[in-house]
Amino acid sequence: MYQRLILPYLDARRGYGVDDARFCEHAWAFPNAQAMAQRDQQAARKLGHEPDPDWVRRHVLSAALDRCDGWRLVRGQAARLMRDIEVVGQWPKQPFIALGTHWGAGLPTLAHLNQRGLGPKFVYRQEPQTVFRTRAERWAHGVHLRALEICGGSITLGGAYAQILEGLNSGQTPVILVDAPADGRPTLTGQAPSFTLNVREGLLNMLCRERLPFVFYRCGFDPKTGRRQLWIGSETLEDDPQAIANQAADHLTRAFAIDTAQWRLWMVADALLKPAS
Image 1: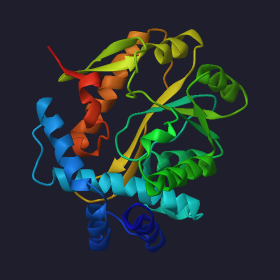
Image 2: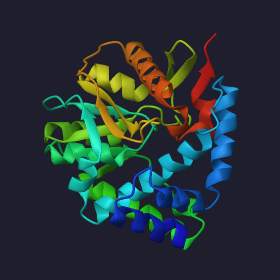
Image 3: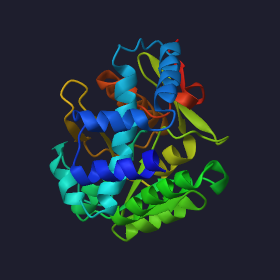
């Protein structure tokens, strides 16, 4: 309970960043943080990424930032959170869909969209309660869900496409992570120089069929300076699903060039990424 809830709350209240010694200490104190990071480090090696000696620390800090961001938003500190993040680029006029990956932290992006009056709706799969083994895990997840609502709300999978279109028509901005596991759904393979990425085909077909503009974004921290940054790409309209899949793979490639330690899905990398032939 203390590590999962109280320490992230204290970090948010005190405004700690990745360079603060106490924040690093709290990040390491999270249950199994180092073991999970070392496991993910081995997965990165299998894909040809040779992590540097600081990789595990940055992986642990990235997850800790996400927990801290949730508490900042729940405590009404969205403006403070935005002051800590450098924004590169700008969102287009509506309607559009924001496309990201599980790299870095997502809550600052939602907060920024909300601050700009763009009505973000985060699209995700609701985890069953059986996933959470302890009361502390359930409460921590509740903090995250509360943060999503504060930022604008969410759309859960299961009839999501209809809700996405309705949201666009009513002035909302759906936010979708393109590297989410397909869970048996059809995929297209995005081509990047060093790997391929499986992207859910239904999402790509919807973007093309409905002629929906989209923007790729990423939000993480600079591994050299610790400075946090939200990068917003240019508005794009495509009629070829394969072209979007390739753009998604290229987008993840650029994130990996910054830091592979900040990707959160190394534990399921085998289902998403393959070395390029």
